[in-house]
Image 1: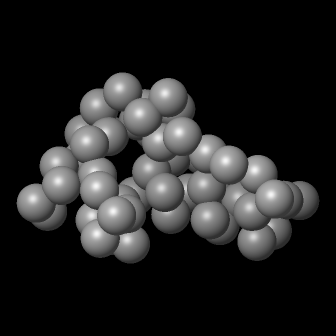
Image 2: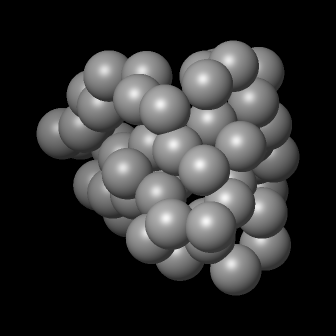
Amino acid sequence: MHNIDLQQQCPLDFSGHIGIAFDPNALGDVLTALDPAHPVWVPCTWYSPGL
């Protein structure tokens, strides 16, 4: 298990519990965890809880 703090990776990411399902920054972390041999780099993008 590896805990990831999205706001520490990307200070512009303000997603909450529900918004994380649609968060491009979190998606990059999930894809990298599923296939560590092919890490996915996602630039730090602004994300709001209401999106």
